[in-house]
Length: 407
Image (cartoon, rainbow, N blue to C red; front, side):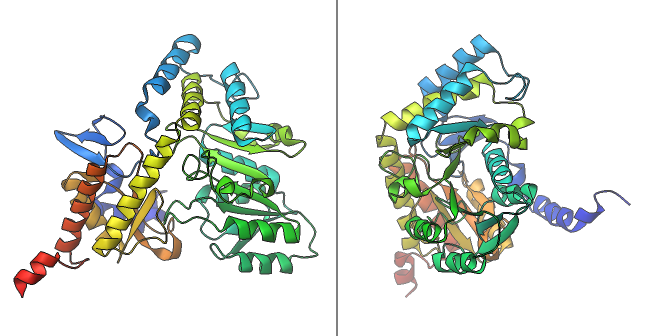
């Protein structure tokens, strides 16, 4: 018997996608032309599923800084931050992040996933309690497992349920650490952070906010939901990633708490992972500068997000609760989601399929992510393709002109 026998049901489902030519896991772009366009074979594809929120992957200054760093420092550090992997660029990026957030401390991880795993596994020990929003990202749940803390889930975006669970833990020994996200990656909904902050204060808990999808999106200066909701003083730690608005790869954590730097020697994902290459660090530094000095990028991003969200709503698609750069159309089932995705790709539009267990409530989602680099015409084109496929599959009503003609 194969070691992989336990995955037989998943393998069968995967093979069915292959035979139907609707497997989103096998898409390979032959060339990426811009933040919004790519080529597959001889076809140009409009990209609407990349999380490239500010469109900085092709920014000339960002690319130039990455090239300069590669020429000066080489292609990699070949070691962890603790061993030989801390360069001047890592320190400068950490100072820049701390300054951006108005915090005393910052540390950089090799991925956003590792930032959550590394921070949460270190903050919460086996006698502590992590209280996680039910819809938190897999990296948050994985971090809770690595740290052996007692884990309590509360209902998604429900401050009353969080308060009830903290009340039940009232006299239980150990620290209580609440973890929520700024914008949730599947349905694009934001947390009621003011209410969560009030519950945190009432019960003497700590609060960690993952701003992965809200950095560069929300807040007057782009710091995220905590800034937008004016509760930054109540947030003990902010975790984020460079792979969304900053257009690269890597993660970070910022905070004010005394003793913060001990995380560098108690966080195993930080200690035992090679540090980010100089080119990636330099690109992230420049992308952060672009975020701070070009607020027009956030304005364009949200204009595009609203155009796409309300356009899909007008067509009759069932969507997440609010317009943000993550816009998900809820499909009846996984098979329909795959078929819809495949037809869109055939028509020249790339989106994402998201399925349980990654999605809340077992939903099958056709997930799009809008960016600042999209033009209004590109958004309109995407909407026209959604309309065409949706009507062809019977998921939305026929166009009004067609209804009149039929009558």
